[in-house]
Image (tube, rainbow, N blue to C red; front, top):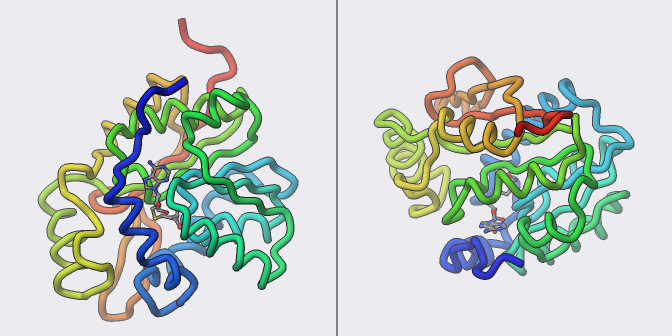
Length: 240
Ligand code: SAH
């Protein structure tokens, strides 16, 4: 049993306070709504989601979980912030989204309870909010079946990402509430790749995400200097 919870109460409170705004397409979570079709299509192109058992870690109000369920997957969304989970449940009820469930449980505890039970695990825009991201990566790796896919997305840590993701997005363009991201918690792709490798997750694909403030559009490209996504696959034979 994990003795201390790998969570920052201030981070969870921040997301709970904004929970009622989660499905407002023009609110604080607009960026997540905008990037959602891009990441969904990318995931689905690597691993077709229909009829897959999918776990979404740090699902919040369920933007990705809901979309994956609509694509035909059976989805469990987990988070440790209570209000966003309630909002996710209400949204599924109102929108009559099939095949989606939500649970308040840590990824580490779920990994102890039901290891190897998912075909796909997604963990998007969450690692930069937890005290020990490597522990989350290990738990995701435990939860996926051998040969299954684990997808991560987070924010790189360098002067450019500081300027664009914090100064630009939170202070100049007001795309995100101030204080959403903390520089020290942002994660370099090499660090995330190393956490993955140590958890028997083989790195298969990497994508970057770009944003044009004039057109207010996002797209995926090869530039991982700010926001990026990794697709990893659980080794079939564990390393010794
Ligand atoms: N993954 C979703 C939401 C991202 S917002 C999406 O991309 O659309 C970040 C989410 O991580 C919030 O819902 C927050 O409550 C959650 N979170 C932060 N720390 C967490 C932790 N330790 N365990 C589980 N979820 C956490």
